[in-house]
Length: 454
Image (cartoon, rainbow, N blue to C red; front, side, top):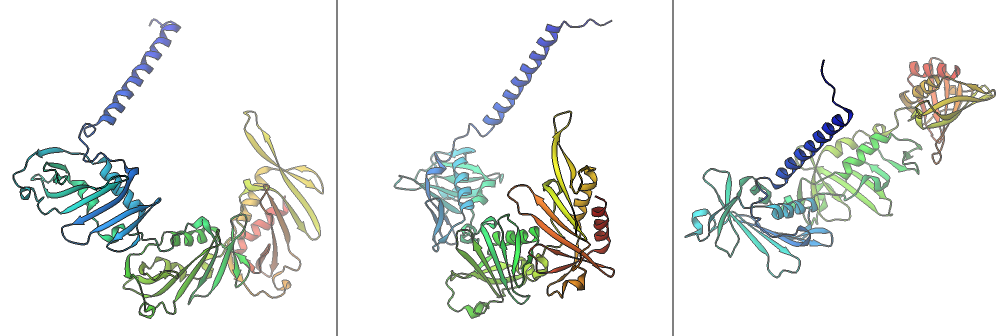
């Protein structure tokens, strides 16, 4: 029979194990923080927050000079233009953390022996308050290919840095350009207008953040499809510059743009994207209307816009989540029933929801049945949109099978939908929606049955 440790012994053992684990973690983290590179000399004693200017001078090619203006980066050479802040910050970070692998020689007989008489690229970095920039010149690769010879002019010392960092500094001017065409964030957009060969339409975002069409008719838009279009516009980047200062827009098909997208922003300003003629395979000429720069953009945005208004319509009867509904009212043939959700706590103290019918008679309901009906309401697809509807009787909406009004949590406007039958077809009409919707019949009949059974 095995002897049991006394209670204090087990406690001591547990504490000893915990202390050992903490000590192990400390040693591991210390090694990780010190690491093989931690003791190596830094190339520059540099604080990236103080850097105000960067230059890249390749042996062949144009000199690039970017500078900090407030919190933004701008390009001064080879042309004046906004610079890509992320790319510039990445360069500064790379210089701040760059370390010397080994010192090759303190006094080289000839810099030509290391390819440093005519460096492949020279990097200059000017810090706040400094009169002259710090410079780093990169030469040939080491014989084993794992490093690159470097020097800090005018000092003669030659040292090696890792070869893999060299590509960080091998940039062309366009690599450091700010390639964003519209400079817009999707959550700033309040209105959206599209014109093109596929039709013209306009949308607006309401106080709940939901999108709806305002032209050519008032009808709901699909939240996720509109958000996807806005994401494409937010991330639109030029692939190249067709012309910096375009004088003749006709050459690019921009004298009469094939497509125009106007974004109205929360601050009252607007961005106007004009898309012209093709600029090669799956590429188009485009510009932001307030700029004289003509850019070449990928075809993705054109392909999205070519889908037309129908692509961005709300293709479900309602976007409803059962947890978000606080109550609802059903009207059938003049009779009304009201339902409300109450909240309670179970034995474990967790919050639960229960549904009750509050009128015309009070009755506890099976929560799952109510939630199933709400789930069915949110799952019905629209088969067709009737944008110029006839009289309500043509769709059975003069005497609806039911009218359902939803109440949501405080601060969210309610929604109402009417459902009617005409022959074998089921139609619906939503709050403040000019269109009549032809519904997927089988699922619509399931909803009608679920509502009647509540």
